[in-house]
Image (cartoon, rainbow, N blue to C red; front, side, top):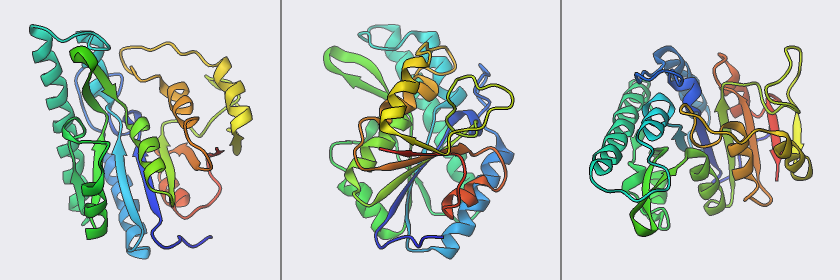
Length: 262
């Protein structure tokens, strides 16, 4: 395997579909899956203690259903919707704390940071935490944009933002599928693309449905791939993080899932 270079930063995003019961209106985390991911990450950090890691997580059943139910997307917040906005943010904070406690039990210094309360245009503090040895963790969250409108900050967008900021970085997406397929949903015997380049990525996006639903208000795989197009001269790996051992293989740079070259 390749050695991780000096000052390399791994941006690891755990999809809401693998760490929560995403299609449930009652938010639940998947304890067994998160424990397995924490165990594998702990073994990696013991082998590569100097590699910096930023941990991101999707909203899953803690965020998407609330945004859909309260119709919070891109509309001015007034009256009861102020409460709905706050309820969604509180739900995401609860999710982050539940996840962080599991990682802490595996001796991983995961530090939950509230995305909605963070100035994402100035990440000097995030760099300080990384330099100190923490694993900062941020998740999908709500934000305010012009004219008091609510917007969703997806963890995928955070991954791209941090990839732009940290020059020597790679994005790793742990999802509930084996990678990127030529068609979504894939046929039963289909294999994911091992490599996906920008020119082919655009063609695949044209074939994908961009419809959103109550369980994923950020666009699913299509939204993820579209967000990646904002990067230049970067790589991302999309793999099935729900399968035991896959995170280890990906972190050890073994061929698994789809390698997206941008």
